Amino acid sequence: MVVSTVVDCRLLDLGLISEDSRRLIADYVVRVKGVRPSDLGVSSSYIGKVRRGVVRVGEGLLCSALKFVTEEELNQLLKGWVPSKEATLADAVKVLATAKANAAFREQFLALFNTYLSEYAQSLGRAWHASESDIEAFIKAKRLKGLSDKTINDEVRYIRLALSELNWVLDPEGIVEYLAGLREDSEHVAKHTAYSLKSFLKAVLKPKDPALFNLLYNSFTTVKPKNHSKVKLPSLEQLKTMFNELPSIEAKAYFLILAETGLRPSEPFLISLSDVDFEHGLIHIGKVTETKRAFVAFLRPESVKWLQGVYLPYRAGFVERMIKPIQASGWFSDDVIAKYREKLIPFEQSRLRREIKETARQVLGREFELYELRKFYATWMISQGVPESIVNTLQGRAPPSEGTLSILHAYCAH
Image 1 (cartoon, rainbow, N blue to C red):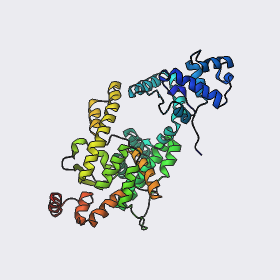
Image 2 (cartoon, rainbow, N blue to C red):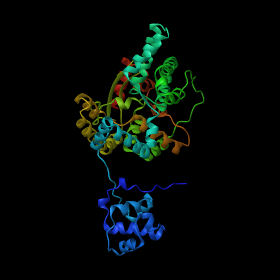
Image 3 (cartoon, one colour):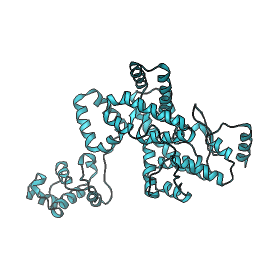
Image 4 (cartoon, rainbow, N blue to C red):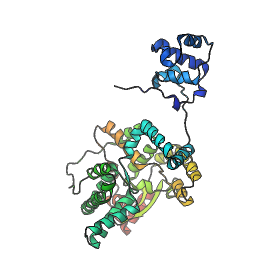
């Protein structure tokens, strides 16, 4: 059953609602919904004057009437045009700065936030933004327990690798995706990374936030053997359906890049605009770490056209809207702002991942892991006659040898 939400007049620009529409709303509430004039704070004779147009409908009466109107009803009464009162990001920065400095304002702000954005607050509560100080706290805690420097250094190395891949944000879906990628390359590395992450969570997060600790700690296992029951990969038609049904342009761009290139889920977020040669459909990645490598990736002309014609203009508008208040706040350096401006995908990875998974669940009727796009890419490329050595090089499972480079050059030229 769908529950309708009543209108909150504080979220509307009441000045844009005409006198005729105000009378229509007041009349609808009294005549159709059976609300008594006294419930609106006025008399029956006053409502009669409102209906005849003798007196105006002030904002007080309008707000009282809107308390009895659902969003759907208001949409119908105003014939689809509802004048919302939208704040700018500059307004948001001012609110945050005021809330930080003024305790009374902060209390009221948090109350409003909980009223209108509790659902989003709960999603924020699913992630831990780790920091360098958390690494230091982990080292200190382990030393107090008497662990050797070698053991501590080994764990810190795995933790740092994981945090760098996950942009220092740990959430259940991100950890699971990351460990799935590690298992693809090395069960040994995946096992030790999972163990180190659990040790990190237990030593640092548990004392600070037990609820979030339990959520993250129980979202993955320390030792998870390979799953030999193969999941049937989505078909090309199913992937097209998923793309078309994704709810946002940015989720479509992320999905498209993953499906077209076979990159690991975290790698598109490392790409800057200067890394993409749109003329030739070529992405320069050049990522080489202790456990992973990625060199180049390719996009079809149709995908390049969509990215240039749809995604990039949308992305540019989003970036400019974000940067203006960030610059005005003075909280970030020019270097940080410049790097943000250059990111190919400047959106929150956890949200895009969630949108893709929810859409895939509707299309496939089952849970979906982003690494399935990487597996689909490899299977599809090999089925089209691309040598497996080339696929392994493109996906960073093997360094480019002299032989594979020559084949890759020939393939690219073709």
